[in-house]
Image (cartoon, rainbow, N blue to C red):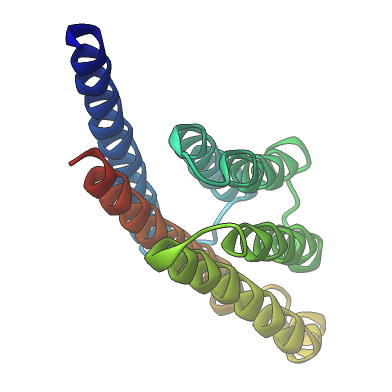
Length: 195
């Protein structure tokens, strides 16, 4: 009986620690989103900065995914996709607009697919927030694809403008904030499970 109580107490401690780690990750990703939104577009945003932010967010998300009880491999895969997108920017920095849009669209679509599938294996409010995060990423990808035809004319006539480059920062910020909010909800559910 004493061993069973000790095991239950240890499991509750681990659940609280897991919830705390996921909450910290959610807050960190939201702060990265705020940082992305505040990047100075008038000077241009370098591929290195975008890549570093994506790698940081991806690593944080992968760690948070490893703490989850539900959909752990899928949550970690979404983080890994973000790390890979960031590495593409760091390894192959491009100063032109169009080489940069493809990895961003690819990153958003892959994340949307992974998170959409993960939402089918989640329950309750975590399912809702995971599906919402997937939907936001897919919507952002569609907006980038739709805006690409207009941007093609602008870039071919005027070159990459700060407004177009800034749109990448806003896309990253929106995705990061949605992901951070989802992680905060996961943390809340983990904390409730520990009670």
